[in-house]
Length: 135
Length: 303
Image (tube, rainbow over all chains, first blue to last red):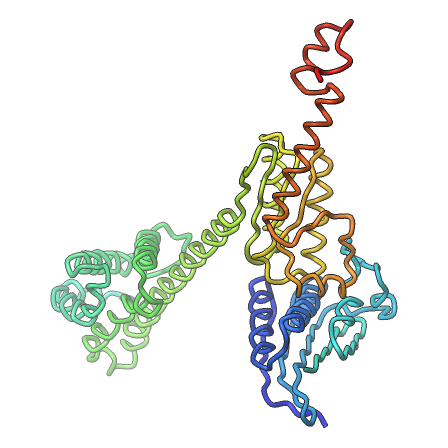
């Protein structure tokens, strides 16, 4: 049973929001007692997701939740946008694939940085990515 | 007779209105605006308002008659932004006038017709003027912020020559696309200007290296190499190193060192090696010039 103990919502529209979101995530990860490496991992993962959101959908929202599963504490981040959606998720998750001249490591790399990774997308409706990291 | 009665009242009871208005605003004086200054602003505004009302009271920005009062409020907002007034304090300038003027119009408000033709338009006009100050305030404030952002981007990316042929570029803060472009431009220009052969890019002050930042770094390295120089990345923290590896970004083709000091050592060794090679091969720039003048001789340098 995963319970949410605290939830913060940030709206993302520009790079200043990105910086703020990263800072917020880092502060919360610190408060939950994540190691420095894990703090960096979560922050980087969030940075990837938000950059995607800004690049493809022009913005969206990020929910930052402090979660608890029994004795384990963790951080869950849900990024939602109302952008064009991803036609082929399998392809988007492939290493080195990018539609925008990027490195193509964003989504697969993010998945490796966190413990749980879930992506939902529908063309024309938007994309939702949920990631969790447990301590 | 539209808009006639208030100008009359304004003309006749101007000093009374002025005093009442000043009184309401005096708490603001001392915040960079002296009472004398405030009085001057108030008198000027009342004159402009009187003029505007006599000309029909339209606030269309394309109307030349409305321009003086709009310009005046623009200046006022700008002045107040620079003096550190809050938005409320700035907008109060006009709104507090309303508090003084409306009670004077009370007799007109009792009659339905004079209410719709006199009191309402004036109230709307003053509201519009108040909103105008507010809007101008925000505009000015945004200008200040935009300028500061530009300053920050410029200031936080110095390219320093720290040794013969060696440049250092300590990056601090967030590397977005715009800043990376400034960094790259500055670095490449400085390489050409100083004929540097090694540039040390220190990322100690960059808190997050995601794939976009990594991509920017790789592009900077590639561009630098096109100019015949090398880049050494320094200041990669253990946490960032692990994260980059997890992300899957391959930085193996790039020279990296943990600290700036190590990077500098390597850079000095590289430049020394280069001069030694050049001396041995006889392509020291000076000798090259001599060799060009005397094509018969000069295959080897003095050893």
